[in-house]
Length: 426
Ligand SMILES: Cc1cc2nc3c(=O)[nH]c(=O)nc-3n(C[C@H](O)[C@H](O)[C@H](O)COP(=O)(O)OP(=O)(O)OC[C@H]3O[C@@H](n4cnc5c(N)ncnc54)[C@H](O)[C@@H]3O)c2cc1C
Image 1: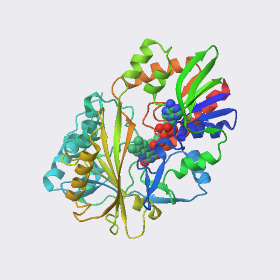
Image 2: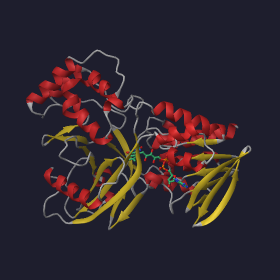
Image 3: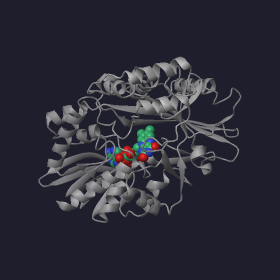
Image 4: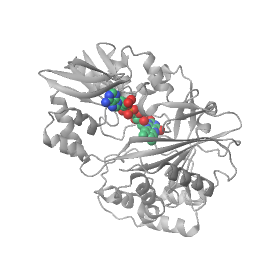
């Protein structure tokens, strides 16, 4: 028997693709992990805001089949809010509308980009976009979301994620709107009903043996097998597994294996990640924006991104009302929720999104310890070392924090599929 730990998308996908011969243990009382949604006072929010997009025909077909095609396909309306104006994403090809001195600096910078082979993210930004775009958008935005020195971040995650247009395209975009799609999510889908949580919920209907409220505490290698010790509704339990497929974040997983070698423990302690404070806001006012989401590079705003679920699917929000989700990343100590909430409200008013008198029918604070993998320069070495050891004891680590990679939903689904297939080969 195989034991799968975690009923987020990767664990559900592993179970789905395995078909049988497993037990799926999930700590929470519901499936979905990071992809859950919640409905409160008539508003449906994703726990953290999600859209679905993929280059994989297989995953696209699977998700559409699971949801009977009930997803809304739409063209991205994402903007950067800076200097009191909205610049369409990606910033570097949509400079029109910015003050002329900013446009000149960005174009000049792009023309004189350093001709270097970038060794870190900061060098990549300057070599790809030039000093002007770096100064006015890329550096302040990335410093805000990552909260990590950009000179100490690797490039492993950048390809295919951050657009890198030519100088000609930038010049054209400084003169007016460029009719070209950039980035992997130029078009995306969103479930019409129930938020992103509909996707894991639909998976769960096809999966047999899910044990909720089952918190794995320890994994003990036992000859060719693994003993999995967990509590179910507080009661101690034990399972003997031929193989374990785990989506538990690597630092937590290594702690569960008391016999893990010192170097593996040390590598797991060096993994860097960001946490996220999320605020779900319901506003008793007609739609306050026609956009999907906004990036905020300026320091005076505490948040890095805000999204409008009402524009992803109208079914998320009561008619004639508005919904906003605000994201604030942090590392280490959790910021005071009440103080952060006040800074969020004040920032939204300053950016003209909320008004002083607005009635906020919902204003809920959520927190995610593991939200973003930070690609520090030791990331690849540390992850390889840990995963090699886990493989030797018959443990496949999968998913966003099991692989310790910047995986979106589609890649999490594929990661679970791969782990299931690997297990079948052994
Ligand atoms: C802020 C944010 C925004 C995102 N936006 C997008 C987006 O727009 N589009 C997109 O495609 N992707 C997005 N993603 C990525 C997406 O959420 C992930 O790729 C996906 O949810 C990862 O699934 P997973 O199964 O790997 O992990 P998780 O969802 O974290 O699942 C892990 C599961 O393991 C369980 N677990 C942990 N420890 C134990 C234990 N000891 N015992 C038992 N169970 C345990 C957890 O409760 C959880 O259910 C976003 C992620 C974040 C954080």
